[in-house]
Length: 420
Image (tube, rainbow, N blue to C red):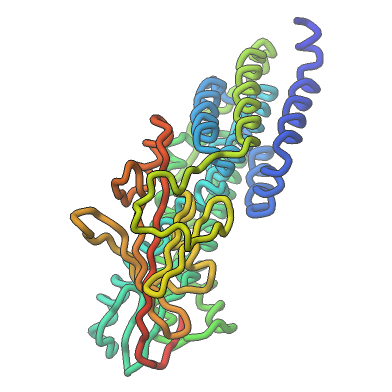
């Protein structure tokens, strides 16, 4: 036992290196998608970590177990990468007794889990913002109507681009807020409570909504319809005036109150939680390396002629007919993300009823051709519109779940098209 405590630092680092090596492909993929955010979070954790008397071992271990249990059952690599990140924080805390709630939030923010969550809400956020802008400007500008993210004015159509929804600015605002909170903690030599951090994050989110709202209004008023210097300047100025400056003002009312503990008792080091956490991560790592069986075509409706279909990849099956294009996918392939990634503009997304069951209807456009796409999740031949609901079926009952996406085509009349 004395030998373990004597070389605890080396043993802990060795455990982390071994697990990262086992998951090298997942780690490299995660770093490739969010390198800046992950590096920033790690640096923030190192410089912002404070000694705390509250034992974080068991809350972190519980969160690690939940993430890895889901990863184990659903083979979700993004959640597994997040679990690896949290495991690194867990080991750092075990060695130093230092923890940063602010950096912890940043790690969640730059995880693929957050990106996926945000991607699923992108269309709804855009539509809500655009409708708010429409209500504001309809009395001042000749806007005849709004259709999803399309404004019709002066016989022209103005489309609000995805960039105007502001995911990058949203993350940048939260990073700036995390940096301000960390500086304030170092200045005051005290720690913000979780409640204070949560309230400040809510404030930043609210400021981000206001910033994007005025950004869209300004772009329309200046008729800045193309990505140019003025377009990006307006976005940057809105970010500064509606996010950064208000944050600098409100941070004065957020003062850390909790004192940093000065305890350095090495007896707090416990090898049992570390061994438990290591085994959990290792078990999930070995399971995710196995090839998962999706069973996408199992008990499929006979109306889909699978003999005319082809496998695009192990997670996507495509059927092409003169009337429509059908994709049968794993639930992780959100059609809104896939269509947007291939150059389509999502105009409107809403839930409709088909045969007394709810499904999603999406109106999208590419090259002046309008497409109507319908999609739903299917489990036990029943249709669902909630990803969370079907994943719970798969998680606890190991039921086969698939996503079905049908797309038809309708030609648009030619119109002049402006893009913001």
